[in-house]
Length: 480
Image (cartoon, rainbow, N blue to C red; front, side, top):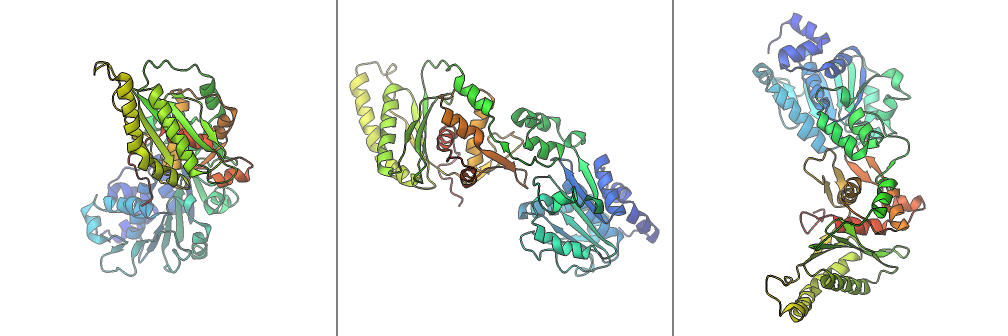
């Protein structure tokens, strides 16, 4: 790279020109504003929607600072190792490769980027924001703290940063989706805003945000939702969390006309097993993923008795819908594991008895006209397991399998693809559960303990319906 002294002096105050001339990137208007803010102000805080190029601008700022200051130190942090190493640190490596001269002077390693020949005194380094001392001990005339996904970083991580920023030449750049209405990042855009240059980037104003992404968020969650506020418009969520499922959707599905099903080909039985005295065990049947029949509700948690009730439900639907495969999905996070284990033991017996019955009833019919042997699956499920997205093209993911399962219910109600059994208690349970958007931009559902603190009962009917509608990709949803 070997910039002249005059060039270094110029670029030190003009990071946009450095990015364009040396890194050979093309920042958009929002990214230019962020870069210029870092040059002009000691502390810059950026709240934005998803996909506006935060990681790119953070990596540019790090390379610019390393290249235009003598013996700088750049501590970088993020709430998770994935965000720090797989995204931010990888982004720095990418842009160093854009100019061979950069890669020659700045040496990239898995944990540090340093000026050739000055590994211990001229560097950027990553520190996961998991310990209070993560950002302590960085002393130099030129320090730039870069904090990615700042809304998810704990307040105690910021304390040593504030102390260091009292030194002339120290700077701070923190960026993130505004996911929390408390904490250091929130305060930087509210009560402490006067000491920052606060920047807001609405995803709708960014050329880097795909319109399809915006449209899908609006379609799935609405412009008045916290998902839209956090992931698109770059606004903090409202003081009160949203209901995950709109009550009018649950009511509409409960009052809808039942679909015409000429021949049921699939029956799903969601079995939610009560773990506490006040909770209910529920068996929720859904036909062809579009018609819920009346759930069976039991006010006890005797696992052997509930196993027997589930066997009866299997037998009942095998008789009623002989062409249908039957899928029994059981919550195995508590007492349900006993129900699952016993049903797994009984599976061969259930199949033998039902197939013998079919032989007696349909044995005289032509083979092409009589129902096939019973197809029965007993599926182990876990609330709180690994999350993800319902569909590959979904713009928002769920933190855990609870969200995935309830998300499947929400999507069925939103698209009006299911008719629910009318039950006011079920409508209440479906519409009373709240959600939030976490620092990784994923949806987290309110925990049952929090619902009970609000005076609500455990959403057993909602859980059973969610189990019935969702199909795990594998039979074992354990966190291992």
